Amino acid sequence: MNKTDLFIGFLIGFATTLLGSYIFITFFTEFNFIAGIQIMKSQGNLGKIITLGSILTLVAFGVLLKINKETMARGVVLAVIIMAIITMFI
Image (cartoon, rainbow, N blue to C red; front, side, top):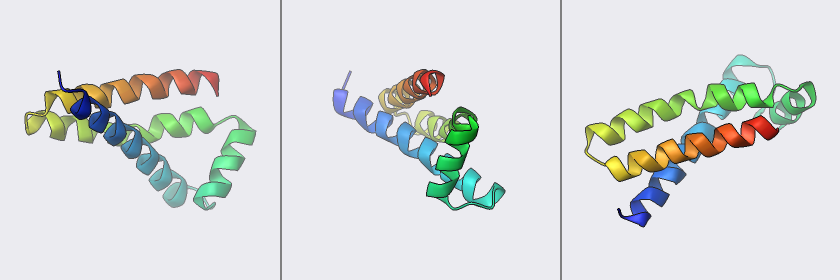
């Protein structure tokens, strides 16, 4: 197993989760990203935003499997697992 591919997959998973959260906050709320994060955290909804943002990670996982990058896809799954653990403690 190539650790570089695993790390790249982890970064892809983390980046797509952030991108999905950004898209959700900017398009479906009236706040900008930073203010939206702060308000959602104060309301206790930040975990839900992170969960909705990780839906985009599913697309990245499917694309990586389609182009036969299984190690990178494992990194994406690792990122989702770590984001789930972080979400439990927020």
